Image (cartoon, rainbow, N blue to C red; front, side, top):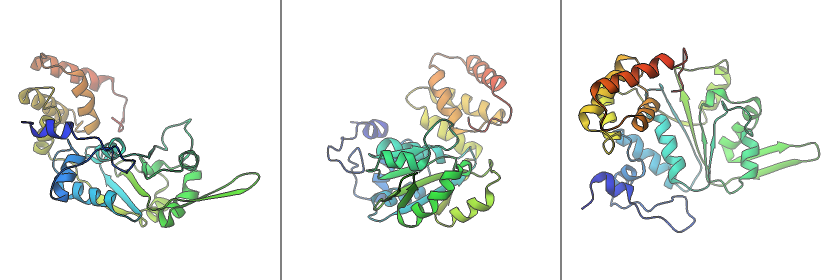
Length: 260
């Protein structure tokens, strides 16, 4: 008999070229949403709403906002990993094609994920409103004007409310085109439970709790840190090892590093 984790890790692949890569079993949306967004801890209402958006037959624009210590990035990662025909666009990454170019190269796209939406490039500000309103993207070249209509596109974006930019006025206009879900920071106790849940197959609960409490102590209650340390720490590590490894990481972290 499978544990909850085993059951979700061994989902059947969907061989049809539909949106989902796997078949999610269950009698209710809640049950299927829990499978889709496993192993995100808690936040059942948001899981259910996002799953409903993905299964809807019309275009939807969703903005996940909140601090870096919330799980909004994990939601984007799960959507990226569990769906077909996805573009994951981070405008903060240099030397990457802009959003319009990526869409033109992937015209069968079903889902667009925009991380760090507050860092959009100038070219993105020009095309995104039309895309959000009606799924249309236009691009003018030296020789002609190209227009693409994407039916039933799902657009998910993330905004770190602690890391705003000089584009707040433009951003506020874009936000009106999204349905926004604000994801609060985990409380200390919720964060500890999240770490134990996420690391359940890698570390004993008592060692996961040591990791969580050390991150809290260093004011680094950030999901990406948990993911990184879950890959570094070993079941054989002692409490002293865990404390030392985390302290070394904190000393090496650049000042004002919010993308951790």
